[in-house]
Image (cartoon, rainbow over all chains, first blue to last red; front, side, top):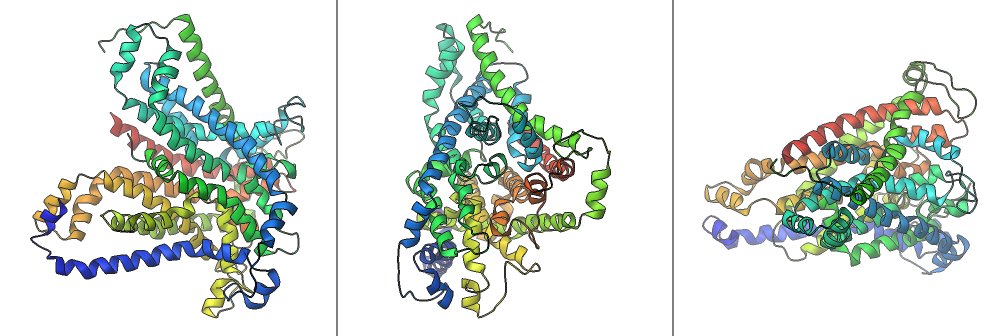
Length: 297
Length: 290
């Protein structure tokens, strides 16, 4: 199609150099974009006294994985990964369950005030967290929990508290995306089920949810990444260092008076690794999730 | 509407009330309730314990008159927004336009550009330290300078914004790329047949059709600028030239001096700015839906 359009005006001889220029430019940008990441990997493989002597931008005398073992065992990263999973898995599942049902009710049932609900939920997701963090912190310290749920005896400094805030905060975005998606499912399916006497739950769980698989896949990829990357909520709503999720625990690798940046680089890479793997494997879902929210339908 | 009001069975009603009830309670209890409570608390001098005393607009007055970090934070937030909106976002759009054609290696270019999007901003902050460190950072090694990029309060905000833009460009590019894919190719063809150059075709034909996407990108940019926190916190806890409104709110509650009323006043200012943008965005969004 483009050939027919551009052929009369631009002969292919003129296009060639432009193409090459385009590739050169894009390659430079892409390499420039990868450079900081490559640099962090490189720094993490070199001993501190070497980079302190030669700087980070120098040829290596010695490459070692010591910092990775150090971050892994001394900084107890496995424990923090586990903490992250304890928070993120229920967080993603609950967010999607709650959001999909709400989206179903808003998009498919003629409940009164559905528009207002959608607007309020979507707007809530767009607020900067700091707007609500002060009262939330106060309320969290005041809500008691039984010891088997939280060893701090309150919602503050508990896994449950963090899961709750993630669910509440991400809920709006997911409702918005899923409601838009559900509107594209032909209404006839719903009508037919209605004639057959299917109840609300059946129409939601058995009929609509299976059709939502692509959007659920996209949203879970995105939500996993976002919740995994959270730094702020754990910082404010947790106090025991041993319960922190891995992204926030990274801060512990900084010493009080001295920071070994090579160790920090190794830690950063270990923390970044799961999201980079998810991104490589579920590339399509990730991009779909980002764009679903922006271009409707 | 032709459809009669549907009758829901008792079980349907129960399912609906529970499902939507939980959703509303969680949303109001964790998001909107606290957001509104911030407004109330901003008029008090509460410290987290003891009696709450109403002081009216005192906190706002102190903020503007006796709290120097506030104005640095406002300035930095404005700079941050300006930098993202005028540098990072146009560059993301530019890359999207370049990548919106059949190119070999297109997938590689795209992946490289939005790789940083999956990284936590805290990790971005740590990587920035390797680049900008004064004694052995890469930037000084390569340029031969000896600038304390992160420690010098007159330059640090700029280099940190570059790090933030590193992540923002990819995000914007993905969204524009999706938007460009949705543009009817017949439009571009028609423009080409009418003799428009590629540049003219983009600015006169394609760009105007991207209006909804532009609004979304604008809102994302504003929200990101107001939310900016992790990156400066990971670098130096947002001090010495890296003050941001979000950091000041957090510092006033997790810091040693718990000044809940005062912190809330800063939060309310953030709330006021963001609600303005959110309202604009949603009215645009829902108007088009009709």
